[in-house]
Image (cartoon, rainbow, N blue to C red; front, side):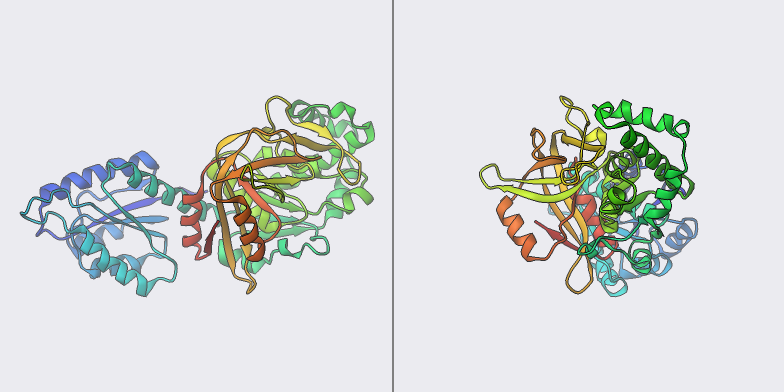
Length: 446
C-alpha cells in the first residue's frame, strides 16, 4: 500500500481566545502523531479561508481530521468537501473553561455548521468525535476511525480470488466483480479449481518437500495421514501458494467439496489453514464475501480470523459455537493440543485440522453480507472466546456473547443472515462500524 496520509485541518477564526486554541492545537497534533505515521499538520491554525486553501493545496489525504479549533462558519467545511472525497472525521473540542466569562472556543457551534454542510454534500454517514485530546475515549474513537480509513485504502489495492464456483445452494457467497470494485474498491479474480488441481498434479515428490516440512512443523500428527494424501496435500499447497504469490492475492475463497474429494482425492482444508497463517485470508465453500470479511478482520487484529457456521446455542452459558470442517489457521489452536490433524468429518479423508481455538477476553463475530434487496450490510456482535476444547470433528470456537445468545440467534436467523461468519480474536467493533460508514454499508449490531 502506498503511504497512508492523515491530514489535520484545524479551522477557526481569530476572534476567539487564541491562547486556549493554541493549547488545543498542540495537544491535538501530539495525539494524532501518537496514533499513526504520515500526519500532515499545518504550521499554524487555519484561521482564514486563505490559510485553509493554502494548506489544502499541499495535501493528498486518505483521511481528513477536520477540527473546529474555534468556531468557523460553513464556508470552511465547504472548501474541504469541495476539494476532497476521502473520509472525514469531524472533531469537536470540549469548551476548556466555563467560568461565566468569555466563550473561549465555541467549537461545538462550528461543528453544527460543518456537519450541516456535510449532510448536504455527502451520502455516507459522518465520522464524529466530541472531546478533548487528552481524554481516553477521544483517543480510542479517533484511533478506530484512522484504522478503518487505512483498511478502506488497503481494500483498493486488494486482489481477491474465487477458486471455482460455490456449490449448489451456497450462492450467498458468490461475488460479482463489478460489485466488489464499486463498493469495496477490490479487484476480483477467478480461476477454476481444476486449473490448480492440474498444476498440483504436475509436481514431483521432490518439488513439494519444503511444503510438507512446513506443514509438519505447524501441525500435530500429519504423519498419521496416509502417504499419498500427505504428498497430494503438499502438491495442492504449493499450487495455491505459488498462485497467491504470483498474483499478489490478499484473500481467497475456494471451492472444496465435492471436487477435491472426487477429482483429486485429498481435501483442500489444510491448504486454506496454511494460507491463513501466511496472511492470506482464505475461506472454503467458495464464500468470497466470507473471505473479504476475514481479510478485514485479519488486517485489524494482525492475526488470522476464524471462519465457520453457527452450529450450537447454549442459553445457560450464553454462548454460540462456531464450527467448520477443518480450515482454521494453525496459529488459532489451543496451546494444550496444538493444530491436530485428522480426517474430514463426512468424507473421512485427510488431512484436515482438528482443534478447539484459543481463548480471548475480547472477540468480535462479524460478516459482510447482503439483505433481501441485494444491498450490502455488516453484522457485528461482541463477546469473548471461551476456554473450550474441540466441540465437534473439525475446528470450533465457543463465543460467550455480550447480549443474550438466544436473542442473537433468533434475530439473525429471522433477519436472513448468511450461514458463514468470521470471528476476530479482539474487539474490532468500533473500527468495523467506522469502516461500514465510510463504505456506506448498513451496520447491524446484535
